[in-house]
Image (cartoon, rainbow, N blue to C red; front, side, top):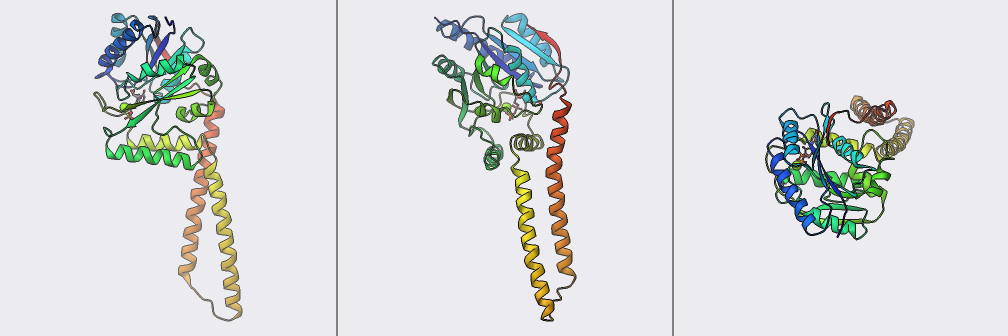
Length: 316
Ligand code: UDP
Ligand code: MG
């Protein structure tokens, strides 16, 4: 018999259409696992309501009345997916919960993979990643953007687990280590592979969103990618420096060309050369300043050390 307690953490932003179904499925799953002697009956389902404008919070309250194991954290406003996950993890850190499992509220990640995750954790894994073996249900566009995202990340030296998002199990040991990562802007799927420890993977196929629509439009995805890269790597600054060096070498060669040409009495390339170099250099300089500015903005955000999220209500 195992008495490990699990807490399933779900960020929820305007998830009114699915939240009931999700809870039913997770509750059944927990009960099944309890029956099979895998986990303790005191396991929880923890929703983090990320400032939803619909009835999500009211539904969480109702679900708590119905199922004792449903808990809820309510943010005072929308603080974003990553912060909702962090709040859930911080909430269970140092408690008698043995494993925290984070999963999206829209049932796109197969909850049944949790069984295998728990088994691997009981075999000594500290982190178990949910990996999408098959993404055919996502649109071609979503797959392409996601693939490019991981490629670009790797290119900039940010190690991520391919096809793994934020569906993972972590044990109390990892939760404690994680609590020492205090940066404001978090990119969770880059942090956990850095922790190392004993890792496992569980494969599942990604389903379509049960109801409602994605809260990650293209603009948010791009922002997420930029923030992911700039919080893990200074490669863009190195890139700017290298471009500067190359430009300098080219300009030395061009000077030499013009100088020798003038001595021989024939270089007069006229205004197009000047225009083009002014534009090219001006553009490059703006890009360089932009990249550096991005990092300075980041430093500014980090030194302020504002709270990552504000909790207005908790249902235990
Ligand atoms: N989410 C959140 N805050 C946000 C955006 C999303 O808590 O500002 C939650 C959302 O409710 C869901 C999860 O994050 O549980 C993933 O979002 P979504 O399914 O919309 O993203 P996608 O699967 O389309 O990438
Ligand atoms: Mg989704």
